[in-house]
Length: 253
Image (cartoon, rainbow, N blue to C red):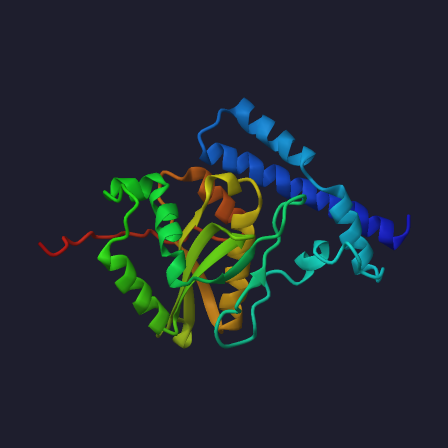
């Protein structure tokens, strides 16, 4: 078996495994039973675009790129600049057979879609955030994030549609000999983006971005009830080494 054939077989295997794991875990997060999760995993395999994998493997082997230009984007996906601001748009590696999403800095025009994503899940609903109108605090918070060089509000887009969001905060500290740490917060996806590998690609990008900023720790928080999400984070290398606690303060009257 040639080296090219071996690499192609490995690429197909990895793509199928990634699709199965993501689909199975995402189905569990949505409350599906074991049978439903199994069906979601099988369906994910059927959606793997083998032609795109073959084209990407050919590009990696030095075959001139033609129709495979977009397919090979995963080779450099998730690689932010070595320093400075987040890139204007970075390609993410999504599920095979779907256009690769782009990650970019959020703009003021994105606010309604971002807030809608934050309200789409139970934690937001429990905080009394029902409805679709922007609160005055949303714009003030966005402006504060824009001014802060250690905060980055990001959105993932597929074409003109905003499909996900997350915030990265960079914090200096005296522990670990003055190590900086990056915190991944408010990661949300549009319902149709689950089982597409988008969340994995966003987190992997965030880790690479934190590394480029000189951070030695990447941390995130997750609601205790999201057991399947915790397993997903563990597969990406995160360890539940600390107990997080929070105290909600009453707002102004």
